[in-house]
Image (cartoon, rainbow, N blue to C red; front, side, top):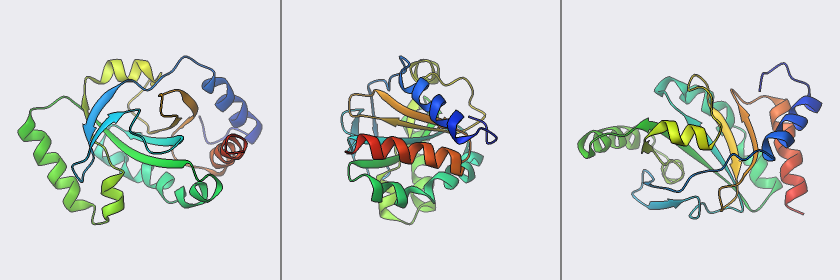
Amino acid sequence: MKAGLTLMSAVFLATALAQSPAHFPELQSSNLQGRLFHMPGDFEGARNLLLIAFERHQQSNLDTWLHEMKRFEEIDPQFRYYELPTISRMNPVTRWFINSGMRRGIPDKKARERTITLYIDKKPFENALEIHSEKTVYAILVDREGNVLWRADGDFDEAKGESLRRYLTQSSK
């Protein structure tokens, strides 16, 4: 979704995408605290915003979303969010090295608990979620069954925030 879209366009696009066949695939991975997740079933919310990035430099893009999460938690008590750095499959030693570096770089325990690094074959994952480019970040709202409920790409902006707020307000009733 481009930043120049109007709120009406953002709502329409979110609705249209929510009706698409996109679905979060079944995956296993551990968060930075070592807890194993069987996804999507182990996501803790009825509605889970997955902040997906493919490159290290995209953290600043994810941060635009992370700075806004408190307001969405206040809207919907069943809302949770996770960061999903998405990397190609690697050997266990390389994965340990990357995860150790991320743990050291994230001093907040709660942030480490909601960061689940995916070391996967990215193409099937991207196809399942209808991700067409790794050059941007994605915010994808899913339920525990993996159904895509809402989505946006790129940095957070108020149109995207309002669209997500409307969706959460309607679904938490």
